[in-house]
Amino acid sequence: MRTVTHFIHGTMAPLAGARLSDIFDPATGAVQAQVELGTPALLQRAIDSALAAQPAWAATNPQRRARILFRFKELIEAHMDDLAHMLSSEHGKVIADAKGDIQRGLEVVEFACGIPHLLKGDYTQGAGPGIDVYSVRQPLGIAAGITPFNFPAMIPLWMASMAIACGNAFILKPSERDPSVPVRLAELALEAGLPAGILNVVHGDKEMVDAILDHRDIKAVSFVGSSDIANYVYARAAQNGKRAQCMGGAKNHGIILPDADMDQAVADIVGAAYGSAGERCMALPVVTPVGQETADIFREKLMAAIATLRPGIPTDPDAQYGPLVTGQHKARVESYIQMAADEGAEIVVDGRGFSLQGYEDGFYLAPTLIDHVTPRMKSYQDEIFGPVLQILRAQTFEEALGYPSQHQYGNGVAIFTRNGDYARRFAADVEVGMVGINVPIPVPVAYHSFGGWKRSGFGDLDQYGEDGVRFYTRTKKITQRWPTGGAVIDQSFVIPTMK
Ligand code: NAD
Image 1 (tube, helix red, strand yellow):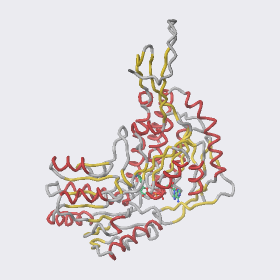
Image 2 (image 1 turned 180 degrees about the horizontal axis):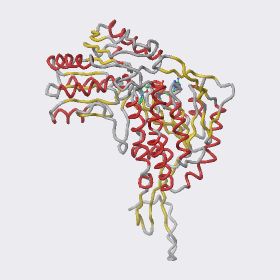
Image 3 (image 1 turned 90 degrees about the vertical axis):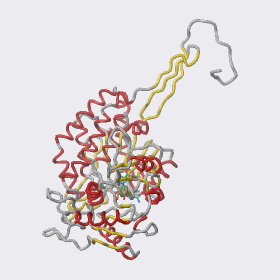
């Protein structure tokens, strides 16, 4: 059986006697490979490699670093098909969606190609008599990234391209459920001209994550995953004096006002709720129609749309979405459907028990629709992360605004309306980090930044965009005065001021 191993200093780095974790083929349910779980000693090999390579990389001028990123981007584009198939075979998302995963990561690589401009500092001439002040952005040294299973290309690329562009070495610890694409991306970066040691990939579970969090040579940690672990990573990293940006789970709401373009809203919501089997942190798993009539029209149109959906194998071009990532995750999603029923919600469409002919052991779940959900239900409060859409009815705009604002998660939210006044008030007041107005999945483009609020994001800097540059650099502030040959300036025992 194939074993996925670590990638250190430009080469595969197997670990003798490593613990192994199964990698499934979600389409068939079979174990297709195993990944080696690393140890603190293995991490030390990656650190030694990064320490050796980073000073020269930091000293490489930013334009040269950008040229390597350009070549990296071109290589990813040239390998798009292979990468998408590799990604789908471990994750389960359909090929078109896997290409979207890679493309959204690629867009951050493109942004990182602008690093010469992004790293320009500030300069003040004449801040005092003969005094100039300037600030420069310097790399941190070694940064690490810990990533989730659901975007095995996009999220590693968000982090690695920004960290590397800024002159750091980057150690990536991808999800053990779909680790092959991250390793392949590191190989392509090497082929693009990135020096060995600047992008190392180590695999593992909690043991490896803890080793990263405790290692004094790692100066910053980027994490994306579920909220409890994001919180844990944030706290332990901070305790060890590291910078941390830790993105967590989500429960995004789609608010539908009575004047919305209902057919468009339904089309948008079906894609955002069931695409990628609902395994997206920017999915829309809750819909809040305002008013009885809006809810009833929405429900009827949605049921018609659901009836046309077909989960299938990732390579089936007619399938809208594929299987869930593991059997364990499928069982968890099914348990939430049962929980909602037990809590008194109405299971309008039940996706459990779906079987795909010829792939009976695959991890498929048909679309599920649950109505009459209330804020007190645990199935509403928790993230389900599957093809399950819940309807939480509201009577007024204010009530609908309150639900996402009061929810423990605050990643994304969308409002569907033709009324600019309501949309504007909603965007201003809602307690959520990323807002869509008639846009169901408002993932900001690469030159803005990505991040949620509340339990969806721990730390004060977002991913990519200018926040990415701020996170992976530290500013040095220099105040200078040059001898002019004039009289000696009097000694002063008072703090210098601009009085
Ligand atoms: P996860 O939290 O299980 O795993 C994320 C990473 O943490 C993995 O690399 C994993 O190996 C590691 N990990 C797992 N258990 C750990 C432990 N006990 N201690 C230390 N490290 C541990 O998340 P997942 O299931 O891979 O991904 C899905 C989750 O990620 C969802 O909650 C989703 O909302 C979230 N997510 C959030 C965003 C965002 O930007 N907010 C984006 C994508 C996914």
